[in-house]
Image 1 (cartoon, rainbow, N blue to C red):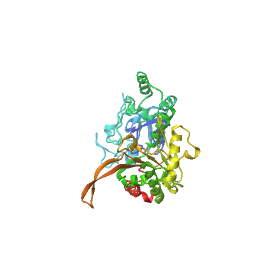
Image 2: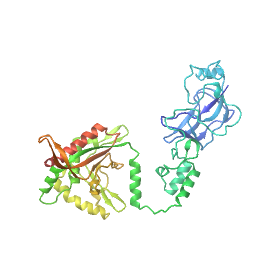
Image 3: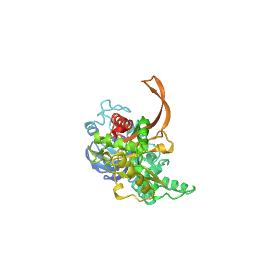
Image 4: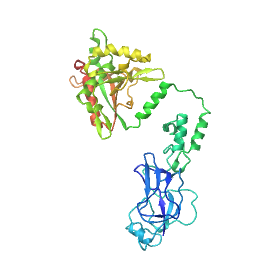
Length: 407
């Protein structure tokens, strides 16, 4: 009997794979568990094996072509005894029906209606339903080595092809699709991106490869503003209060700022924090070392110098490099709430919104009283922190900001 060889389901979210090597030819004798070809998915290169012995009748797959899961890529001649031994079909199946005892198998179809007849199919059609990812998904769901090489020549990333509808098997974006897309771009007005813009874009692209989430809380700024007014010399801004509060909260629980590497959480050796500074066509993040060991007045003295140095693109060596978290004061732009993205090498970014005068219920006086409040957000790598841990960290930061004498 002849049974089809199908593109198997090679992973939970894999909808298609590209054949990179075929190790068999028509007429070859194969045995159970023998590797017959090698395919490449978005995640890895994998081997395709067969579950029973037989003779290769036909190879329909082509090297370099991507096929959706369930597509027919060949056929195999097997004896009914061998098929039954492998649990693929009964010895005497009823015509047009499948065996009720045959387990589901992603390599072969088990009913007689799926037997291949002479003649090459005009187009590949998936034979499985209910895929985790639609086989006809649009966009660059898979990038072949040839297309990836062409993209590297032009400095194009996969994210740039998100709107491209692929015409290849399983919705794959082909080189022809890519070239047509690039030709269409030439019809639009274009300006060169600065090196700073390209660096920021690449950093954010790498950051977005992780599962990110954001939590928020309102913080009352009146105690902080009053504390600031009492400072005799350099008066720290709200962002520095937030930085100092975050440093103390992280010093109490360094795992919150840890990085997941393999199966271990790598704790930071020091509480080195950065703060975002807008510069022409981008953002720089100067680093202040050992923030938990510096007073607010010490932070205020160096903060202004680093802001000026960043805008001149002349940061000192000690202010460059890696930190464990960043503070961004998007409230300076009048923004109330935002979801900033942590840098690729960091797990956390703390955001501070604009202060707004608003009525707040006071339990003591049983009335609404005017307070200046701002939204505090914490974006985090969800692999390292869950909502509860992130919420407790943010509550601790808010508590310290509302008790500035502790800073």
